[in-house]
Length: 335
Image (tube, rainbow, N blue to C red; front, side, top):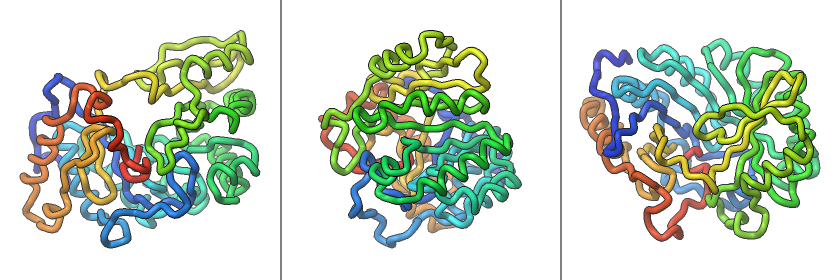
């Protein structure tokens, strides 16, 4: 769909933040059960027990968002590569007028099945989540023995040099906090960005409260102790502390998603796999698009839902509510 057909003024919230980035969770299903994300028995809340958003629904929403000034789309999950149409979705987004960047976040388990098609579709960048380089630890964290497949897929991806790649590494005290050097080795010969990430309070068992949490300051101390020669760089709003090592092709960053507040610079809107618009990570309810998606004539109404969501976007999401009404898994909203 051409954005010319639904052209509108940009999405700007009450605090003059322009919304130009949409994260679309194309599924809430996942083939891993990471301990900091969901329990083994985690139940999905979709009444249909499947991915609610159809291929055509997602294409329609991307077209509407492009008409509202959104320029970047990231496909997330759950695990987006569980959808057989993921390459088609990437191609659709790339062909939508106004969309300038299309990226994807994956755990890499199924990357060997989809990589060629994703590249042919025009994918611009890929984030791969991998929290340890030890097979036994990987199985303990994810509850699945698929490390060798993920590592092989990562090696193939890096060797291809076909895409900008970022590695998402959730740091956990006493679990993977001794693997900083191993992950930094990826930056020696590959132009990859390793992102050391803080735990966030979105999981079934709230393990972030159990002493596993590692904050920005501690991660910084660990890196400086291991690498006194670190070269700091000016980071983005989320990659708060960015750096590289002399002679290394890649770089690294710390994502202080919990200890630092990025709300003032937030330019994102999210769509869950059930078709709910979320203007803030801490918004539990959101606005349901599903009844409108069932009608082919609802473009103007969907557009107004997006505008309403942005109008209701809080200045600081973490100040909303009592902090106890959190989601039980990031797979529900795609991060």
